[in-house]
Length: 296
Image (cartoon, rainbow, N blue to C red; front, side, top):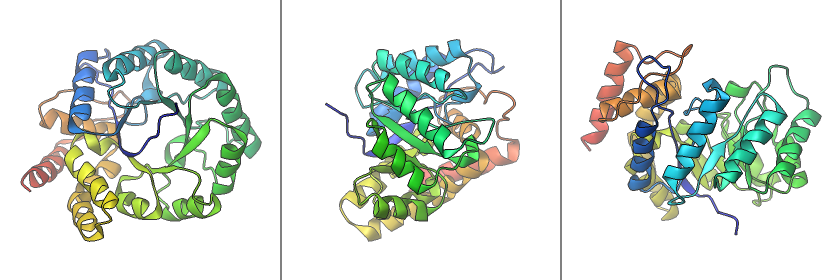
């Protein structure tokens, strides 16, 4: 039976030792347990927050296997298998399937600008290699590839197991067009934190967010208010957390989430170079934001 994804999908970090050289798998396990205990509806390892692009193949395999074993089907899992090459993405997708992932996520990262035909073939090849559902991920800020809605819908129609879309351009009109042109039949998920409320109003089935590492209850309460059709409560909850959501986006996901986890009692190291951790001023801002949210 195909897993149905909805609600708050928590994105995990990849903890390192303080020098950034070694994986810290026990800390990863603690972070996963925190997310599950908080009540998130699914977990997604090795995305942008998880610094998957900065891991060696061996490290990627270790994190993927450990994460899936720790999740242990307590909630559904979506493993990001993105790679510069189609062959690399296929190897990762097969590995994720072999180790129990419920779905994989594919961002078409590339050094060269990809044509529509190349992107379609990339997804078609990965789809043919695994039996898992695939979440198509559109995030031109990190991949350098922006897929128009028409191309996304073509991929969904031509690759059977591309069954859902994560939209992270920050353009709410993309979601409206997915809903309109897809005739409400293509599940899409918000990947831009400051658009969470608008995305749910536009019909998003879920919110893919690293913020769940820091403020899971507020994220979950917002989703519940949406399910209850309580727009007034949803607005209040959204605007209450919006300053932190904005800060996370502008400060960079690995840097802000790792700093925030350390502030809440779980040291997970710094991001891997060339990415810097937060400077002293930014840490002070983050600490104040978290303090204000904990106070309500």
